[in-house]
Image 1 (cartoon, rainbow over the protein chains, first blue to last red):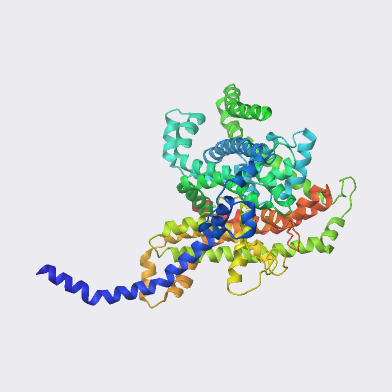
Image 2: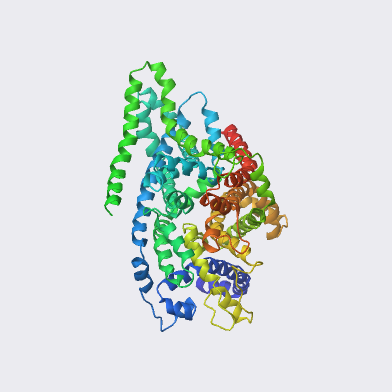
Length: 296
Length: 322
């Protein structure tokens, strides 16, 4: 009896309304799918092409490989890895990125704590300079810094690029961490002080553990920023054997007039690490962006 | 490989040693002082490395570049405003400046409006996070890799041959003849700017979407009950509420537009009238023409000064709320 009543109610008046609702939402879903396609297809095309032979790439578009005969091959990867400097430059990229990230984030965390929980004359002025520096284009500094490196014999070395990245990245990071560490509850720091904890202890036992999510997203950000950098490495390393993957790939793109197609594989190698970081740590990544963006 | 291995070991051991040593040594030195002195000096110990880096790599070089811009090529002779006169009379630099204005207007406009619309549209679907991931995906991709991705999208073959570039293949199926996107002077700047839009829209979308979620749904419901249609709700309720966020996103995009380098350098190297200021500066630097390069830098700096002041003002306002 009740079952029947429910069935009649469901089947009669609601069904056409639902149909209309679904029909109304078709344009919405269509828009969503078009937007997704615009953003996904270029990358998909590159990845598919990286598994095709250079000859195939010249004869037909990447989409033909989606249907048999696929003709997939590792030829481009083989060729890229055989190209002088490519494999070494991948290692170089790691040797540049990891230390540069560690140096920057450590110094920025210390300064962030200092600006947030220590009182000293000039604090506000220094910090406003830092806020202003976030906007200054690094191009403004390239010539003098290059001359400084040339004069000190550091040009082309790993140390030069670590230091340069640190200098350029610090203003934003100090700003972000000062806000993150300064946003922690004051009572905790005050009671720790009353219990006799000095600044080093308060820093290691309270500030760092509590601000760890912010620090983690910053690490991801700095890592990707340095890994993907072209300008700093191009300027301070030029043709040094220590140059990273981005510089080597760019050199190949501009020097190979034709036949550059096998560089698809190089591009995939270059973006594999950032994409993996992004896919596995998406939550931190997004949080890093929103906290940095919305607050700053 | 040997020197690289050495570097790796050196970095792994040396960097923690230097940073740990700095904290340890300065604390030891401080402990020799009176407690009052310690509280006076300790803060500087903590913030000094960051300030020193900012001074050596940002502040002093910026001042130095300003000085260099009034000197000749090798920085030996004072030439007054010559480098600026050159900048504002030379067709190459003026063309680059014009392109930066294009970037500024269209890149910023499309990223902000696109990010807003996409955030609003995606807010209405169940598979929102999946859709967002798609738009967000180009963000971790370097400009170098993105340029290679788009080299394939824009690839051009002479008419009559098979079009392997995605865009030319698509317009070919509807009967248009292929376009040399990156060479044709009406399409090349928009094509480059679109690569930028493609990489940055995800950033705008994520930030705007986060603020969008913070708007109370009752407020929107009230507007709808008062008879506002969806477009009116978006224009008159949502957009004003999102304005602070939109301003932040827009300033970030303006800075990116002014500094744009990688995409142009990799895809066209500034040829076919696609040059931008940052690449001009790099070219002068590569030529060791420090005077003219310096002048290009100063023009760039002047362009960001309004943003710099805006940033500081906004920071001050936030501090008052804290």
